[in-house]
Length: 72
Image (tube, rainbow, N blue to C red; front, side, top):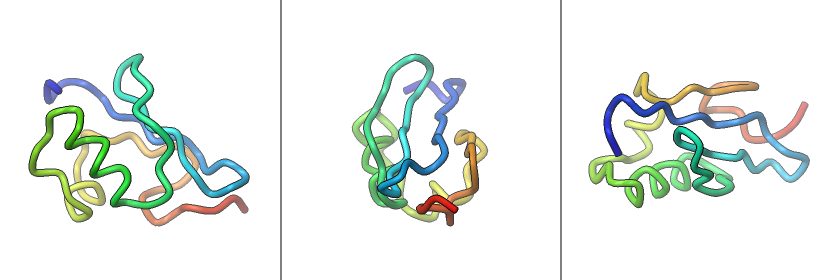
């Protein structure tokens, strides 16, 4: 995954999951920071962990930041 690609984490769905995509590729539904980190590792960002997910500017959080995992 090139560092110029933007990762988008969408607002929480009714079950608390958030869609994650990079450019036009859907990576999956995340239910927490570990899921987002795992998607990033699978996409080639080997050093991704919870701290990275919370602090990187590579991720655009929509509908709430990395602490938001439920609707409301």
